[in-house]
Length: 166
Length: 179
Image (cartoon, rainbow over all chains, first blue to last red; front, side, top):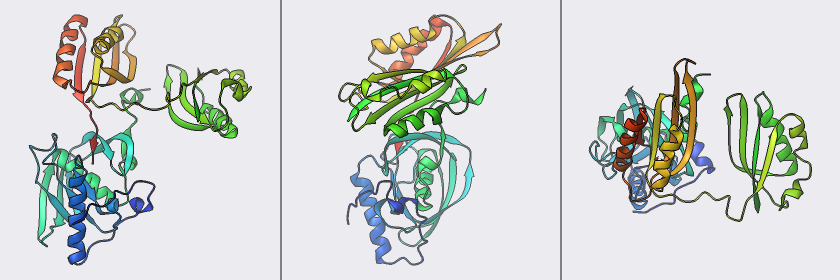
């Protein structure tokens, strides 16, 4: 329906926890469509969370199927309402960037595998087990719903292997 | 705005950063980019700074004399216009780990292979670890490949160096993912 402008930090909406969605009405459907359109329009994006387009409701879209890192292991386009991570396994570090924090990247450690429960766009309850790049993208987008940016999760200053031992 | 590169190094102790940044703050300088780290027993600060009115070195007067008096070495470089801007680099970013028994020339041999192929080193750390009897050299570097170069190509080059230098080398992609 519409490609929306990506909000960039220090826009306060990005640090605000989002509200749960109680009812799947037309406005929720429109929000999911806008999230999808905005993600597709940006070309390289593999996920967008509602606060990134200025809406404080718990909804994200993720699609890593067109990216090099995710094309062999994904669930296609995921439109997630009230997503909740109910299990995590393993650890995996990637250097992340974010459209809402331009020109900065950082190493972030996340779970390698997540089990996510969410309501689908058509109202169905779903539980998926996701791994690899898709799992990273899901965790990054859900963080947005809690007012967290990857900057809150950076685990090391570049190659800081030397600093562990005095 | 005129930009300067300020380098400060001296024996590490608590309080160096606040001592330096208080002076910059009182001058009205903006710290645009900086990287500070402990190397051996020394603390090294490298900062790109700017000031709306100061346009040359003389403009700083004797602002840094107190730092010198406290045992720090201070060097100020005036940047040419545009020298503060990070160039856009398109290629894949890789992290190269090199480690093995310490010997002369590890950094030089690795960096020469990269430089000859226009691979741009953007970060480099080295450390001597292990015992005095059996020293081990560790080098970690990040580099941007030219746009048309694949990571396999650099892998092949590093494999050849492994044999020549008798060290272990691994290469992996760390190109950031935009989410």
